[in-house]
Image (cartoon, rainbow, N blue to C red):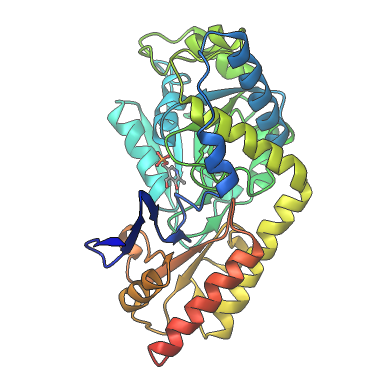
Length: 380
Ligand code: PLP
């Protein structure tokens, strides 16, 4: 048996070409199960063929069900970061102004994308422990300056989930002309989001979080009013132009050669979701969140987010017990698990446990039992 030792003490075992990596409990990429991995090695199909259109139609119809939407769903062979830009480029008009609600690292990055595109915008900067509420945006929107509002549903950096319903009510009642864009990168397919009922114009996620697929692919649902608006916007470039997407949509195709393995993976995932049942899936994520929080409380830990906005897909634990996170990380790696050690400015102060996608309650129980073993080994 050969082995190599990676720089971060990961023991990578190589058995005749088979490599065992630690099981992921980080908030993306998340663990991909064997059945989904196998779907990725399906024989390729040509992307301008009837068999491709059939595959795409199945995938799109399945995603529409997960999102409770009749809106068009587009498939993108790149990370969600591209969809931040796609959303803005297809809605921003010469007199537009964007309002970004910022309550964490990813919502902040989205505003940077607006900035880099040279668009006019403002941010509402909230404390990172809390969700976005209607009262946070009402004053700004009432100025009439803004026609686009962007927010992150589930801040992956902090495990803060914002409640979309009161925001939907506000926008519907007072600002029906404002385009609403929601980053659901770490909530889509793990949290119930009724897109049409809420009236979300643009919502998207990459596949490496609660969809439980490998990274490098993203999906979005787009309202008709965005598609209409996009037609009157010039200089959007080609790659991110929704008009181009829409032209190919008519044939159940994608504008460019897509990641076909992801489409087979998505098809398998959708079948899995249908077998589980949507309501069961949402409930499972809620249960996993509860289990993780009880575990943390039993260990004398608190949470980084306020109580009212704890996420069902990620738990961000404030390390009040001052555990040596790096030592825990090394020991967990030795047992075959990859933990998170906090994101960006919260690295070291917090650590996150992801419980989404292919992470079921039994997986979580195994992981937390191993975590307990490590704590005992470290005399905590
Ligand atoms: N938005 C959120 C909330 C995220 O968590 C991430 C990545 O972790 C992104 C956007 C960027 O996604 P991607 O890496 O697929 O571009």
